[in-house]
View (cartoon, rainbow, N blue to C red):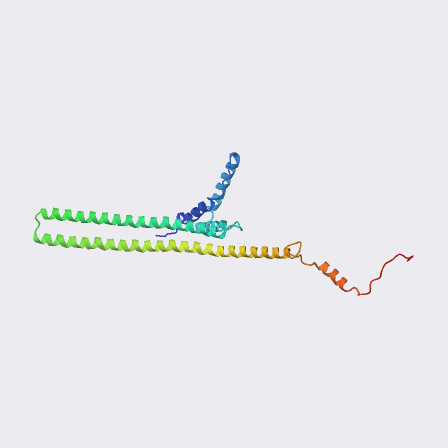
Length: 248
């Protein structure tokens, strides 16, 4: 049984989206505006139906991760904390579902085994009460042993299949969370790098202004101004002529 059904894969983004939007102020929407937004959502969902489920899932996951980083000035520690809380909540809920599933399997297994043994005991009693012959007894008990071997062999096979599938789905789930964490970490590193670069530019700008410049970043000299400077430098260096009235 495959683990990544479209329904489950939607859980991650839905859970994260709820967590991600919980701290944001809610706008009051009334009347025609509310109806218009509802229509827009319906149209978007209709368009999404044409997108393959796996692509839709990846887009949703990426959309949430990008949303965490949409404010370039947001505290990086809070972003990681929010992501970790969502991942841990999802892991806790899914592990609880796994345990409940295994417990249910064990209960059903025990219930079926009990019913089988009770049926075997009843048949044995009914047979012995009929005062069977020695040959009949021999044949009956041989058949009973055969049926028991078949039953318990089948149950062992079913248990092995269940455990194999169970472990595979748990591994798929953990791999899924790991891939989401890897995606987050990549984006987080880029986000922190961009923040450091902005801070460094601000420090350089402050330093530049502190040195007496009017602007934080000097403007580059245009080609036209470069030509003016060149012509100025080529002016001959001669003694200055003092200007005075003609009658002096």
